Amino acid sequence: MKFPVHQSIRRAVRVLASALAAVAAAALSSCQSTGGNYGPGAGFFNTVIVDAGHGGHDEGAHACSGAHEKSLALDTSRRLASVLRSNGMRVIENRTGDYFVTLAKRTSVSNNTGQAVFVSIHYNHSERRGAQGIEIYYNALRAKRLAANILRESLRAYSTDNRGIKKGRYYVLRNNRRPSVLCELGFVSNPSDNRNIQNPAVRQRIAERVAAGILAEKAGRRP
Ligand SMILES: [Zn+2]
Image 1 (tube, rainbow, N blue to C red):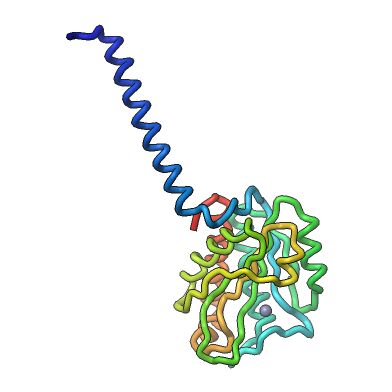
Image 2 (cartoon, rainbow, N blue to C red; image 1 turned 135 degrees about the horizontal axis):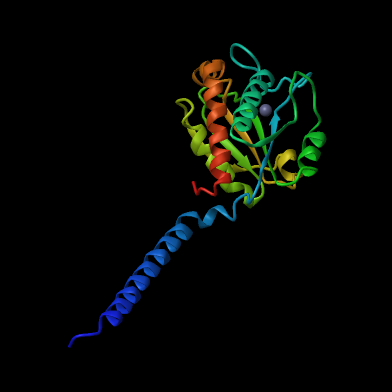
């Protein structure tokens, strides 16, 4: 039996539409199944509070050789701020020199800034010299995906261990109304990590990768 031409076209369109709907549904369900445990994400933001850990009399962790944590965190943070700005982000830096900033002040800057995420930059220390690697802390669930995005990217900066994302009840995370993470970007107590961290070219790569993680979160990418 032969259908008039317009009727067969209508049929073809109906078949195509249902096939497209099936593809869309499959794509949606695969997104949900891979990303569901990361929560809703940070949502819209156009500002990053870059928080260089320690400063002034608070030197942070002492490196096995070279500069201490406060200087390394500041240098990395300044590089991060610069990379983010060149990618069109608004950036507020909590510390731009070697001086002490209270945890309350760091957090209130974040709480008084709308449409922002808070990223604190640190380097780690352990009595066990063999301990090495990168770990990213979050407290609120909505910052979990940001932590995972930063972890995935920052592990590409230099060769070290993946220590994962972790829930941490640090003051600057607990008292923060914005999605906030604390990045421990390697161990200055470990000779291998420290060799990398003391190298300005590696710190530049770390800053670029942390920025890439933040931009991936802004784009809604699932880790
Ligand atoms: Zn620290």
